[in-house]
Length: 532
Ligand code: NAP
Image (cartoon, rainbow, N blue to C red; front, top):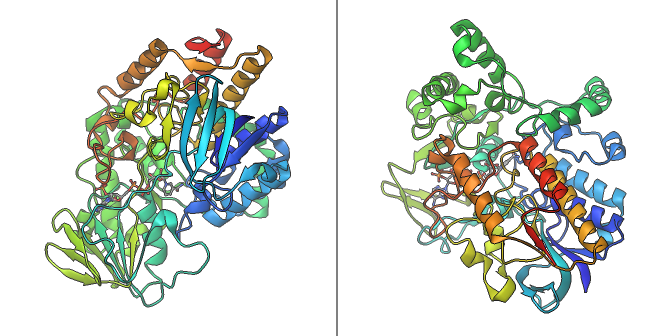
């Protein structure tokens, strides 16, 4: 029996494996893909890139890695990020401890031996004391539930499964994109000028803002290398572990001139400042949010030539920032091309996919390629897709039927020795992912070290601690605008049964508070956990 089985060779799994190997533990990574990289292995669609600054997305645990790796763009594209993760893995010398092509189908806790038995699709079995989920929060892609989806005779795939072994021919092709979340927005912007024609099927628009990406020249490279300490100090202080933080002034204390000056500056600046460096009231007070939303709506109007199309691209059902804000590069300008058409899939819904294309309530379209940018069964989907059975055979899928229930976003009562790194109800999605995963990994590795040092074989969240944590998570949503928005943040997905109401997926108290809570639990002898 191994000490630990990690599922997933993405940003989390790589660092976790490194820490466990460093302790001399027998750990292996089981990865469904043919290689490492997780999100950055799968999502190869054109335009896939960071919207966190590259140097804030890299790992912080090794100064050597930080110094040796040169990001070429302020917001790196998928190929570069995948190269980075391969570089890190080889530098750490841990590749041999990863097994690829392992689709984990089931995991069962053995109460007699306090260990997990993990089954893979090809019949392989692994057993380990600890099962460590490094599954990511957006790794269970969902196709739309539209009649006839299997009948299309052209090429079609979900963006997550963009082919990796061949180039997809775009030139001259009649292409459809369904979905306008962050993925659709990146893909549409990139392919619009390259295809014969592009038809975008949009149900609800998102609020998007410019990324302002640029290459990192020599001077900027030297500057960011010299700023190592400042960068990570800043990431450790901000609520979302981003380089951007809320404006300290109150919206109500500044003149209209000052307010507009800030907003113009943010709209013209790189990255998430347009979302995260605003006045706090923008996200707390609906009236203020409406003023900012109108400011952004005017920007959209100024970038789209056809006023009707512009109005269609402006969200009416939620204010700016209450769903994930896609950052874009010439997204709105794509709709000024004669070859790009925007279909309102609310007014004229898609009725079916046909052999030759897409039929809406109004029109029959013919396509060569259909791209489904239709999102993910967020947070819990990747766990639900594995038949996970805890103590006494209870299923995690059943326990989480109405939404996740966890302690610290790391464990679920009844599922001993299973840790979910950066999982549901942790601070992962409410913050820049890598710093959050490093915190979760460090804490879990310390916990495992403690258990081994004390000859303990079993650790389990107590039902009381789990209930209190989940109640606190739910309370965090009360009265927020976020709670009313229907997106993957809040667990809505029209393509998954039962995901049509708010699911409390995220810790909303901010990354520094989350880390302090973890530290406090450990300092109190792992309060809320039963150790045996
Ligand atoms: P998403 O935000 O959930 O968007 C899915 C889109 O598909 C929505 O526009 C949705 O419309 C539409 N859709 C779903 N089912 C449909 C149907 N049956 N008919 C018509 N439209 C349908 O998913 P995503 O765009 O993949 O993004 C998910 C997250 O991944 C992002 O928010 C982001 O956090 C992450 N991501 C990050 C980056 C990056 O820059 N680092 C890039 C891409 C993605 P409705 O809104 O009407 O449901």
